[in-house]
Length: 294
Length: 339
Image (cartoon, rainbow over all chains, first blue to last red; front, side, top):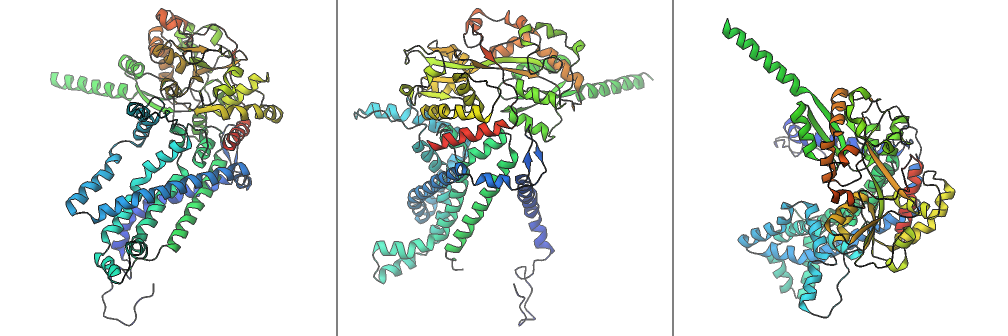
């Protein structure tokens, strides 16, 4: 940022030159980032270039072997599948979450706060307990099947638990709030007069939605996509509990390297590739998303 | 003068209390394996505080100790993990004079291949990996792995989510050695495992009994302790040791070479070896108790549980296989992913 030269009498604000106060305010965050993000990231990078020993310790003998193994078709296929599951989860979250978020954002203030509270309520319970609740619903002799039996529709009992469908249900359920909240943020700020203007200028409901509302709420959709897509790729608990650990995801493979195969360096290499993928997703979304007007 | 004396006495008492309170032992053990009552009873009797941390796999224990984490005084590795630690000099030899209750352990559980001299480990609990069958749903006799992994049982199976276990069963069914993993033996096991993983509905090591209880599956290859709990729940769940051979595990108590409170650790081992204490462990976690004096305190029903106390004994323990663990992991990951 270039310093303003034409206005010698303008007060120097924090915006132009962060003073010691700004740094003091930032210090806890910066420290947190260094200790819990930067340093572990460096350790991960160093480990990924090492070798394992027989017991599972790390030998500091540098090579790129682990990265070569990452590009073995076995693991590439798993990366691809994880991305596919995460993408489907993200799309479903947008489709289900957008109308909800939009409605909440346009509701009266009192109602809006109550609805927002409802979106947050699941977080009061542990994530694992909520996943076990889904198992109770979906299992063969579970709530869903007994409901179907009681309704007497002549349907066969559903065989949902431990299938890919169950994994997608679990993923969408877990990440939906992370899509609703950012879209709500954008929808709430949406200026009604802009929508009216669209109608005045002859746009139908579809056109008004696609040319005005969607672009204006795009920052929310982009933020939600990032919050859903990225963690959904690495999720391993849901695939284990609801998918029966049948189809390995990249999160499971990484977990196995540390807890079963005693191969920390390879696990670290998978982790590094994973982080690069996150960074790439972020860059793409930043490029695509139109900058919101100030 | 009198006040001064009593003050001094009080001071001495406080100091003494301080010191005895400072006595502690750091236990690093399996989750869901050490009843809290046992640790509380030990503290109540000796005043030694037990700091208890848990792990969920031998590999987790090994990697944490290799990485030099934590100052643990007492750990609970299974046979093959203890073997690696002995070989690497990571365990302290036990002082037999301090373990007066060691005589309670049955001789068949001492001096096993992982610790031939018996100097480093004391058996805690033992068990097997076997087949549990819901006899209400499955009418054919199930005797071994080949009976379990049949096409007609597709999507009716739960097995441990443990890659070495699955490969071991395949090796057993082929009549191959389970502890000498070579590229050739893995190549032979590969088509068998490939066929088997397609038939399985759930892979679960933590609580495989859940899928059986829920009725989602009818047959499982699981830890004997899980099968024992199922049998307690309902006698329709029958436990069978596979005819081709089974994996037996011996979970041990041992003291790391770096332990600071070795005396307290010995005291805790000796306390756990008492029959009445060991019985509490059996009540809560119905694995096979190697403590024969404790077995005498169990009820006939507990002893009649076929999963806790199976009659045949064609089971063998795992030995350490070193870097072959990574080959096994890749093989099973590949085959699971291919379906």
